[in-house]
Length: 633
Image (cartoon, rainbow, N blue to C red; front, side, top):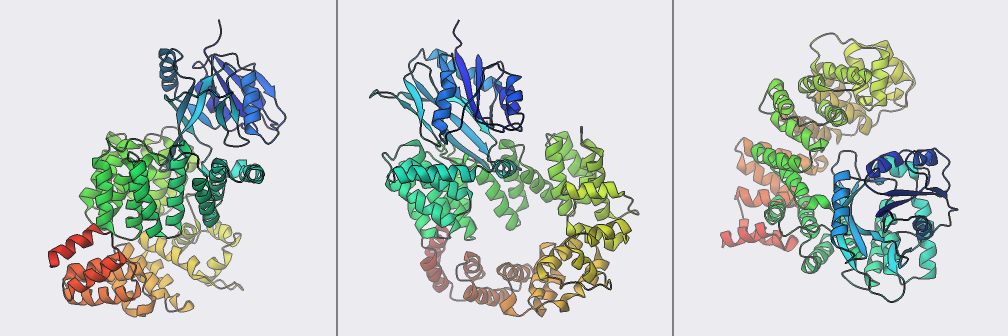
């Protein structure tokens, strides 16, 4: 009997990813075909564990040619084209196959949903649809040297429908991208394609994506604009993503007004895509227009039944709006509202390390470590040892040693060396007993990024341990060690960006004696160091000490956040008159920062209507300002 569906892969040096892919396919598809284009690792050996249909193909810099060769070896009625750095959920695959069978050959080609993970904390999930399932009847083949697409022979109309199948793509994770180093290969192929046809919008789009990945923002923007100008049809699947990337590039270049114009136009065409209104919220967020941003994020969440078709950013539907609302309410010290939004975000993405940390950080303001531990453990909020490890690293950097120590009790199968390293850092923060550790604990902690240079400096200040000294003296930061501990060595000068993280860590860990010692070194730096030190103390809830350092600072050295801190402090102490004066001073220095307009308007000490009018000239689309203007008339 002829197989129903064959999975076809083209691979090269995929030993790290291939097994996960093939395990997810095994038992779900009827046949697996693997075509190797020149692996020098164990890729082929892994493939042969799952299928006897493993073939060699000489690479020709043409992905479509390789895919079509793989298809020629498949005997299934249907073909699923899948990459080694992708995998499926077996239940979802089974449902998708049953769906195809139920259509009884009504459709020829199916687009699948591809979800791409691009950061280790599970925050960034991008989504797109690509044609990956097609009839194996000789009428369809791939075309295009890179980012190949399925086309039909002859003049027939290609029938397309969206499949229920979801692919999970791990190829954009930073460690995978760095290891594979595919960018140069892709760029060479695309440059060649553009030389032969410089009017192809899809090729410009793919070229723009490569430039974007390389951080070449201006060049990427130019390529995306050319892609859009050369589009055949605005409803081609890549066009909406092209507009998304144009907005993204404009935002990175801080060309916000141009971005808003494109967003408004895109919303008219792609009215069910949350990506574009979310970008509007992001622009307002970057401009510190928190009330306007809240309005946008809340609108997206409230209308989630409309915004069902993300064009790229899957999190834009509700996850990221909840995250942003949590961040805004945290800044506004409305902690209950912030917590509610973080919990909603976690309900949608329970592997988000940053959200778990934000929840614990907020709870720590009102609850004991024991209460927080009970809350986290009874609800099983931390799902794996990996997530637990990453959560603990961030909690320790926040100085939350006691709750971190409790959460270490629930490791399932973590390496003891790593647990001991985490325990050492927690005990270093708590410092309720003499620290005991081995050089192995310390070295493994450095290797696993539990300890950084600031941690080691603080640890040495506490223990004067010879092992720590040896590590520091044999590192590229030995001059930092010599400067801070008065060692009689000829050391290069200590830099501000080396000194400040150490001071911040000492403040965060509440090492008062060492903080005092570090403060004594301020004379080594220019006077603007006082304003930066003030920011550190304020951020760690030492407002009175911070104000003393702001007093020592020249007003030209005070940062934007420093002005915000001073104004907030004055308002907390009901000194509206001085807060208003400082807000006006900040407004003269930072005219593009919305916060200082808002302070000046809300304190209501002077020409409120005049300030609103000036603000509207700068931020003409602000609904918050328009509301204030109506109230002032």
